[in-house]
Every structure is written in C-alpha cells, then in structure tokens.
Length: 170
Image (cartoon, helix red, strand yellow):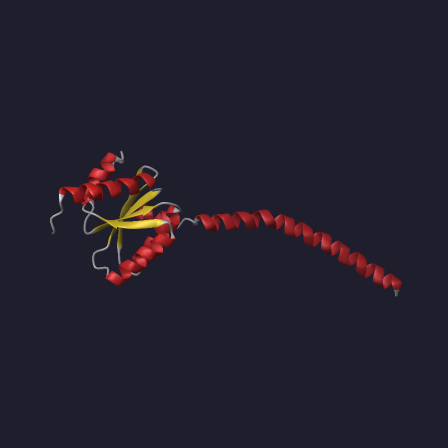
C-alpha cells in the first residue's frame, strides 16, 4: 500500500464528491484479477454508456459519500472496489457491468440508485430492464403502428378500385 499525501487525498475526495453529485446511480464492482487490457475495455464501454469507473480507497469514498449526504459505507464492501458512476442511462450501465460479470472478469458488489442502497442481485435486476433507447424504439413502434395500418387500408381500397375500373374498361 502506498502512502498518499493529504493534498492528494483531498483531491481524490473532491473528485469523488463531484462524481457523486452528478451521478444517476453508482455501482460497486470487485475488479480483483482483471487484466489491464480488460480494464481498458470496460472503461471504454462505460464511457460510451455515459459512465465512469473510479478506483479509490474505501475510507476516502466513505468520506465523499458522507459529504454528499448518501448513507452508504464502502468499508462494508470486500475486495478491490471500483466505483462505477452512471451519468445517464443507469440500466444500460448495469447491463455493461453484468456483461463483464458473465465473462467472470469482475463481480458485482451492489450500488446506490435513486438514494436506495442496492444488493448485487438488485443491480442485476436493473441490468435486465430495457435501456432508454429500447423503450423509445418500442414507443415509436407502437405510435407508428396504427398509422401504417391505416395507410395500408387506404392503399388497399384504392388498389381495389383501380382493379375494378380496369376490369370494367376491358
């Protein structure tokens, strides 16, 4: 374990506080055993999903959570903890984390979402929810479905009328 100066600790706590204040949800993962390349892949996927993974000492994270008024004690988590801050679609971020868990590269420890402490199982349940994009596409599909059906009915009547007229002409 390396020693960190007081200034560096303050800087880490301030960065954590900034992330906590902006987050929609934060998930905790144990990344022990993950290779550097896999860590880079995870971080890039999280970045695309409007999220960020930070690694910090649990004692510093505890201070940051307390400063931001969130009732959570990171010291209760076991292993090397990564804090995944979701700044957008939390369900999408949970899906990314669950994907990596399936590959047995990380384990999910829990999270905090909408002010509620979550177990690892609850984080996986969030991952099973549809993402924002999936919900929007279903909404657009259900809105456009009646209109396209109506258009087909109109086209069918016009087509039938043309068929009758062409037969009458012959």
